[in-house]
Length: 281
Image 1 (cartoon, rainbow, N blue to C red):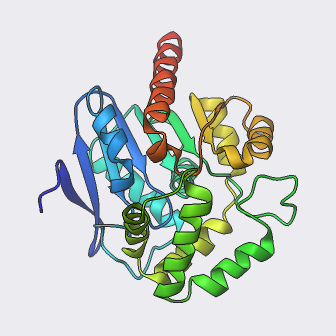
Image 2 (cartoon, helix red, strand yellow; image 1 turned 135 degrees about the vertical axis):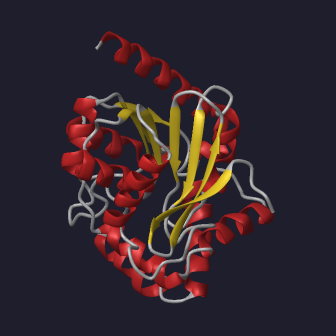
């Protein structure tokens, strides 16, 4: 089946990244989270491609991209993003990352700085996902819970299926999912084999991009969108670490899908602010 604007870009020997590239104007790149695909951003693709060039990617070992037995970490994902940007001749870009997709953005900044970046949108991800002090830091959960998720659920396909289903119903959305919606979300994740999902999970959880988060907010216009369920601790964490970042609170972890109109409006307003800020520099 032909996908609108779909193409493949080689980022390494035998490794191709699937991208959708639609629209004209200033480029916006959307990066999905852990094991998810371009399809979660369908409502953003439809909306922003009316005014911008929109690129949505399946990271390495996600979706339609090559399943690779190496490079399933965010250091490599950051390098892959740089290669995509070069191949697509992208400059003055807005990067939008959701969940672990934010780690790819911070890693890119660690490797290449912010020279080619116009603005940044981080969707519901702490730059330090794991800490022994979960009561004062914005983290994915208590250390024991994260360890249990890895050892209990991410060791076989059934466990991955159960983990994603539970996360989708408890954290991603605020309403009751229809059965077909839940099945669709789980199917997105299962396009990444469980053994690669486990690698990505551990690589992400042990990341620490606090310095890159601080640098980003000091260098270019930055927006952080946070889910309501941890808004208080997450907002305080971001305001302390990255005081230059705008902060918006909206919905659950998948707010851009469940509350797409409001999310798109928030990003539109931020892009307007970003344009005004850059024009006065």
